[in-house]
Structure formats: structure tokens, C-alpha cells
Picture 1 (cartoon, rainbow, N blue to C red):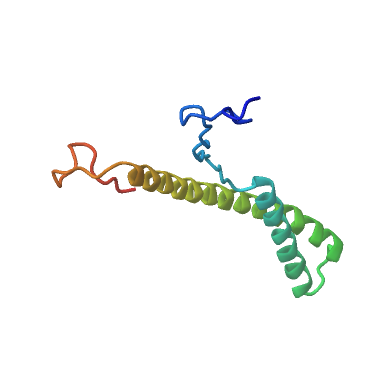
Picture 2: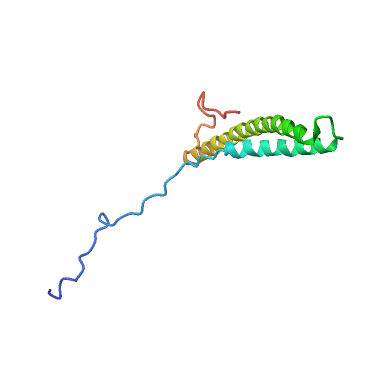
Length: 125
């Protein structure tokens, strides 16, 4: 090569690679329903254990009383745990929707007129 030409060709600005813009991803947060159900059932079993041994022995004995109460209160606890999971899921979904609204609002420029166009006012949940 001659002294006039450099070893590396010059790169034009159009040829330079631009970094990719950051991507927005949606993180889906939801409760683990199995954990709520098992937790409720275990809590019901602990309550059954406490109720069984807090009373004097009956004609049926401690074992059968404990067995019936564990089944009944375990099912009731699982039902309450499932309801708690549904409520937690609704709360998390609402928070996620609000966050998306905030993100969407920060990317858009506010209207110049001061008032929002009809039908696009602030929504109350």
C-alpha cells in the first residue's frame, strides 16, 4: 500500500452501527395459587390441632376428633387461602395497570390546551 492510503478505510457516519434502544418488557406478576392453598390448609390443620387438645377428651377420643377437624378446617383454610390469592392477583393486576398508565403518560407529551380531550380524562378505579 502506498503512503497516501491508510490501512483502515474511513467509516462514514451512516455505516456506524447504532446501539439498540432499550426494550420495554412487561413483567407479569401473579400470586402462586398453590402456595396460598397449601398455606391455608396448613393453617387450618394447626387450628384443628389447637382446638382438639384445648378441650377434654370426648367419647370419640383425640385421634378421631383431630382427624375430622383437620379435614374440615383444612378444606376451609384452603378455601380462604384461594380467596386470598384471587384478591392478591386483582391487587397486583391493578398496580400493574396503573404502572403501565404512568409509563404511557410519561412517554406522551401533555396537551397544550390544558384540558384533556373528551373521553380521555383521568380514569378512576
